[in-house]
Length: 546
Image (tube, rainbow, N blue to C red; front, side, top):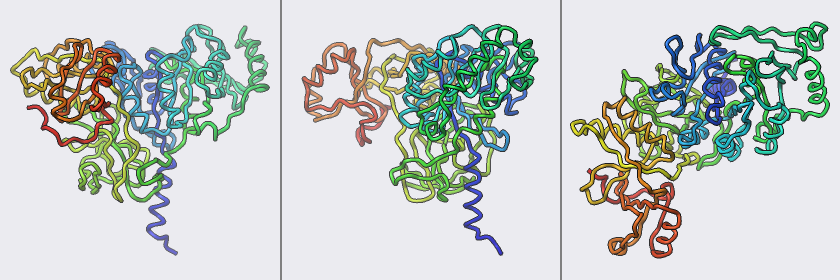
């Protein structure tokens, strides 16, 4: 008896969805997020030699940190997609920036994942940026797994760290393993799911997998092997098994409980057990809210949304890449899809599988996958693509800028490259660009969430577009889009410590030197609207400045 084609396709889709895991790694800077990312790639077999956060003459640069400025400073500046297979599971790992100046990119990325890994420094615990990123995850009920890192260095008492997670984040912490010793005396882990001890051996430069030896617990030889750590381990295990909270999968999936793992990403201790547990605990893609209701991943009609734009990932191509998170259905190369914002159909001609800056053309993809689409100007952040009835997913968050600066080109003969670079970086969401409305002062004003974004713009304009620039900081602290009766606007004498500009769509933007000054202007001119960027609707006003 033959199986109906529709049933076969439905089964294939369900099977592919079930084997997907899409997650982001979040942390405060220097907690070891990028190092853990590299080691997960090492243990999955995606790379054969782990990179270092800072490139040295005898080491490779981190696979996820491919920008020149990232490698020079040893920080993550932009979110990176890394897709690989491990034990039959298709993993989409999104490495995010930790520094608060790049929060906007991280928050957008969190819109595209089904779970998150929170990395904590064992000596510092919960840090400010960790709390901010956790709040975003909580808002979306994203399940979180916790990896307490740097156990090979002096740190805080593990019970204190668990208590801080519960008190500060309001989330139940359930350890899945337990450290044996700390700092130089860190010997391994006790597996709380199985009565056994995991011993690890250091490797040269920590670039290869650490051999792991398993011993059952209790065992007569362990007292001699562990030495002074044996007695405290027995007491801690008794406390954890007697009074510890049991793991509840429903609470974990609701973002109310976090499984906790200990280890050292740098020395590879605990990375393999964590990766194996992650595949078992992390959920596959689930339904997504849309304007047409919940969209299940097993819906036969294709849908997805663009959450990131990146230019010049590959120096050989010098193109722009749109990151598409597939929500439902089967994606196929050359398929025709409906582009909601443009209100027309387009062909998916060059889809790519992404691995950092590396890419390869694919024929198909499924819900949970992040696909790279070469972007000739068709896509912006937040675009929805689908093969069925028009719909839109939750809006991608935007953040009001707090830092402003005048961008000056050092080479007036490269205006074409300067303008192209500026436009493409603005499309990525790195910053916003404003201009003087009088068309006399043509130097653009940059608006960014954090000061480091100015360094990123200057570095990328030079390295990717061959244009040297300087950013002269301005004293303004916030911006508002102002609209109202044209005659009223024309007659206003704005106070000092403000500046009138326009964005690329010709809409009026006012910069203010303080919150108090903004409040004064709103009171003085009640007929005007003072709005944030996301509150401003599409405008048919003047064309962008030339």
